[in-house]
Structure formats: C-alpha cells, structure tokens
Image (cartoon, rainbow, N blue to C red):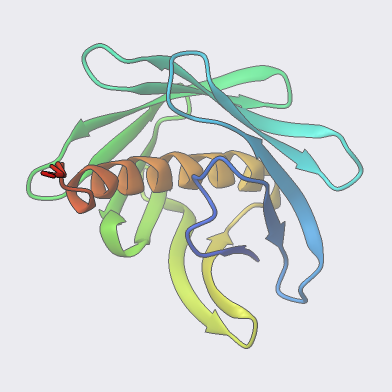
Length: 171
C-alpha cells in the first residue's frame, strides 16, 4: 500500500497539481481544465510520460467522465444517486466510490476489495488529501477519480457561495 499526497483544494481545479509521496518527492503532475464537454485532466509522471487522463464526455442526464490509463480507455464514471449519500460507479472496472465525499473521507472498492481510501492530513507544509492505494498500478486512475470527485464537490459549493447581487448607483 502506498500513500499519495495532494495539497488540499488543488485536485479538481484548473491548475497544475503536484502529487507527492510520503517523503515529499514529486511523483505526478496533473494539468488540464474542466467545465465543458471534451475537457480533460491529464496525469503525467515526472519524466513527462502520460500515465492517465480523464475526459468529460456528457452534460445531458448528468456529467460522465471517461478514464484512460496511458492511452487505453479503462472505464466510464458517473454519479448514480445522491441520497442518503453519494454513490459513484466506474463501468468496465466495476469499481464503486462511497463514503463521505463532502469531507474527503471515502473509499473505492472492487466488490469487497478496497482499491483506495481517501482522507485528509495536516502536515507542516499545509493541508493535504491522502490517498492510500492498495496497488501502485491503480494509483494514476485513482488520482483521476479523486480529481473528478473534487471537481463535482467544489462546483456544487461554488454555486451556493456566490449569491447574485446588483448594485445601483443613484446620482
């Protein structure tokens, strides 16, 4: 089992995101953007090799994302329902994501086998998401899934935190 660290609130944003190991060494760089159909985030090893990417494919009937490991499509992720808790399913991989998505405390499972566990940690350099991945080969895809969940979470919060307001100047 390996741990991967990502600075909090950087994962699903349209910025460059560095993924580090427990010793603080940079392992991956995630770049790209979200928002419209066809947008993608790409995950590169620090040597420049593309290791995974995730592409937004649908806006009708809920947003869906295609997951790629290197250049091979490995699954399609979509939200199944939100009540009483969020539940996501990744077709082809037969993975489910469940837990407290809003507090970044969730797990990815393949039937009864845990693939990844997400949690938060505070280190001397700031607040981080910690991804415990059972098999290092699954890490790139797990990081992409975590980015989508972060995107959905903060996109939902963004609409609530910015109320529409008008300013009228009368002279």
